[in-house]
Image (tube, rainbow, N blue to C red; front, side, top):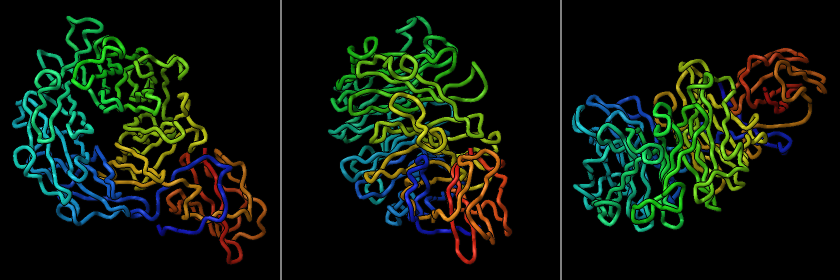
Length: 511
């Protein structure tokens, strides 16, 4: 269907804030890349100082899974000066993993980490690769650009300290249980023996509840704090031994637990009898900590979003939500959905991105959810704090795994669309130049659930309804004063009327 791009004429401040794809980026706000092997899934994104966008994840091959890296220009096109036509494939077989990460180090070097396994039966180990800015391996790092760290496990993330040292986190296996594992490398890729025990620190949360019980603890997030300490978030079953709960730990710079945080450096947060798996953590300018994850399994069907707030010492903020925690559900035409990552906006709100199951797993769409600083959903964003995007307009799996804000307050997300890497750039709908809005006619009720009434226009030659991407989803070549919109999904739409050779457009929201 042909896209229609017009000019914004009036302010839209009477409606909720709505993010729309940036028409100047990629193809209608989306940059895509198809790897030679077919299926690929990104899990990490980094914006360079020049505005180019690095995306990293895994891609399939005839021999197994490999790490795929690509770089987009600021306009959403592939950077042909990176690798081969914008693509680099790490020629090192990795386990079937959705966890590969990319960061910029030493100003212009590109660091990529993942999990490697020599054979199906062997233990996992950390894989670290360093590239030059053009996508070639840096021969001065590790063994011709690659370091493999034995005796570790399944990698879940990494960050770069201000001195260039690397913090890697993963799930370490030992004697029937798994623990938080943290490794620090120096800038050459060697273990930093001044950290923990010979460069490693292992954290077991079973010592909080019952030190004799074997537990499953795994980290999913780390951040280097302003004071140089290391905050790690993940999940543990050390309390229930069946379901999971949020688990946080803080380390001093030498790799030892910070005893001023939580219970001797560790804490566990329960969300009742539900499973709670932590996905990401955010820290604001006041050193307050927000932990966000998935709540599922026990109380009722479907998945919910769990959010907790702590002070810098690990105490729950009793003024946030209910005694420091909130549980919300994605209700927009879906029964199952998660937020994979989030960030804190300039206003102190929390904007998260993930997916929403619409029709089983035959159709999964992208979801955005925004919270107020007190843990309530921000009803000034989208519809009751949520926005759903069906970018490809067909039953495919669409999910965003990472989200960041640019220096000019635009939003960039990376994820999977139609089994391939995709980067989406969003702008405030009130600032978009893609839809022409004029007030030559009126529509009511607005928002509406079933019927949209049209008034104050004498002659209608044709009526069109557009979604936020500018795609036509309804057309009628005759005059009418009423349109049935009950079958539309919840969201923002534009109704466009052709009258005596002129086109007029109004905005409405379907509840």
